[in-house]
Structure formats: C-alpha cells, structure tokens
Amino acid sequence: MTFAIWHRISRLLAAAIVLAAFAAPAAPHPGDKDEVGCHVEQASDTQHCHDRSGKVLPWPPVKKSRADICHDRESQWYLQTIHFEPFNTMKECLDSGGQLPRP
Image 1: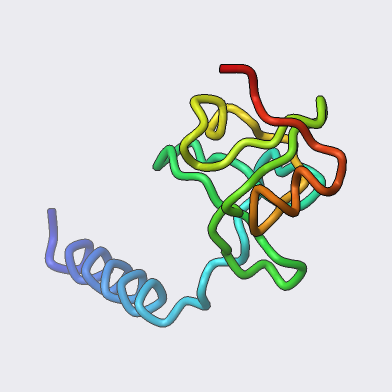
Image 2: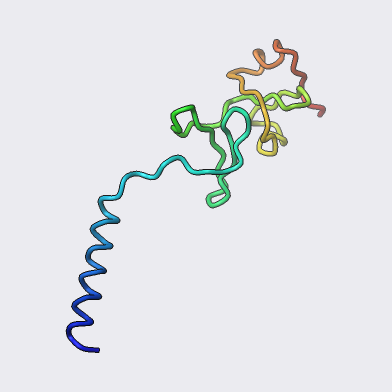
C-alpha cells in the first residue's frame, strides 16, 4: 500500500477513536420489560428495573406474581418471576392479597 492510503486509514482510525471517546452515554437499553420496567438483561444475565427516566434500579426485595404469590429473594421462584408487582417487605405483599409460595 502507498503512503497516501496508510495516511487516510490512520486518520479515519484516529477520528473513530476520538468520536468513541467523546460519545454521549448510551440511552437506556431496549428489551422486554414488564409493566413496572424490570427485566433480565440477556448479555450479562443480570436482573434490574428502570424508573421512568431510564435510571437502572435493582429488583425489589419482594415480588408478587400475576398469580398473587409473594416471592422474596430466598424463594426458588424469585428469579423466574418476571412479571410482578414490587414490594419492600413480605408483609406488604401479603397485606395486598398475596400468598406465600407452597413449600
């Protein structure tokens, strides 16, 4: 290759690096979120929620499933419960009409 071609390639590469370094932060990522904005991110297999602004939040301490079963983080079904109503405590979930999971 000639010097002119190498020069153009190096300039393009340098421009790409500068643009990548100063690129705006990524917007909230798309994905199959439930009605409260929570989902499992496939790339990292992590679970989290998004508030209305797109800020990432951890999943709640207790999830009430569509079947009205309350699952805390110790429940074997916690991670599989994707569509849920969030609660801070098991008592709040049960007081809302939820039930404990079967043993």
